Length: 412
Image 1 (cartoon, rainbow, N blue to C red):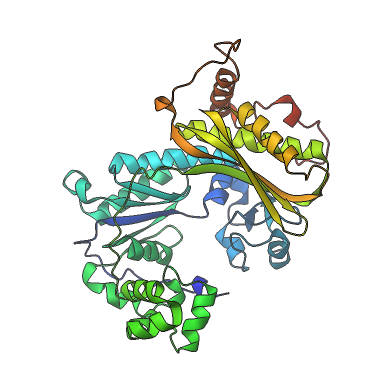
Image 2: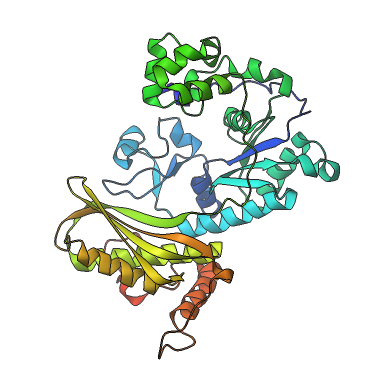
């Protein structure tokens, strides 16, 4: 286990004084796995892993019982199963997680409009403007935790601090199901004993470079001249890490960050060279991307595909459409054209992806009907599918070509 994962959890809070600590980092605990366990309470207390069990699948989420065996997110499933052979494997259901994520984010936005989601299961909040109405930051954090449990039956951990960087570290310190306050006047006391890998921007290679310089803790780095750090890491990285080591992080919580692109990709358990199967996958990915576009109120004008061969060489192709779209059939048709033009139709592929870029707000995008096109068509049909998916689940309504016959090896 790397030092990135060895940040010690304290026995108690560092302090209760949240004066000058308006930043909260809320992080759901083992999010995907926790959502699954709401429907499978019989699995509580057992090691559970969410991920596709195929040879190239990775761990998407793992309960803390599984993590005790060394299992963690992004680990290859083959390794996870060796580490924890008795783990219960649950295939992912992304539509379910998206629905819960949206609802949890609405809880945050009912507290303050200053919400910056950084993943489906975590966000920064600036509660400066909510203090008069709801109380001090630590009380607001406790309220959020109570509402998430009451409304969704899952838990979250909340860090309270004066900056985003320290708040994120604080939430890691109290996982799972905790609240940790780092008073503004105790930031240095909190940071300096931590391993240097706790700092944002310190990956495995940077950590190795710092350790060669004798820098093992954040305190060691703070006491190292900036010139020394810059010589080893470059001016930008050296300056950045020196500031973080003293708790300096000027970045504000930035709500409503616009998406630049929306995409989805799939790595196959075994390489696939059959063009029919590849096009099926392109359709499935196009459906997923289009649904996310509509969920976010976006349309996009540029469609791209990503094709990775068995030798890991990757080819990307894109096309800009005449008009922006959020319709899966239009995205799929373009993706198929790009796949055909790639010259890889009979080449075994290990990964395919579909992405839509050049996004605009859907309500501000004009659309011209083509000659002979009916006023109602695919767009309306797909929005009806969205409504059915919200009520019955993402797989309730599918294009016929994506419906597999029963008993084909799928885990029904």
